[in-house]
Image (cartoon, rainbow, N blue to C red; front, side, top):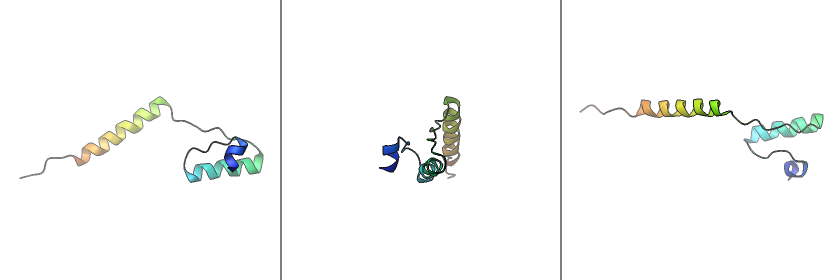
Length: 61
């Protein structure tokens, strides 16, 4: 309720939300939520796929 009443974003982890609330209380500023760029999203996805592929190896018979 605190965030919604003041227009502070409620998305993100508890730590991220707590940081936004702390900044608001200290400065009165409402911090914008940073969204990852398309390039960052693609980089994270390719890392995840590579990570999964390292576990998919043939079982020696």
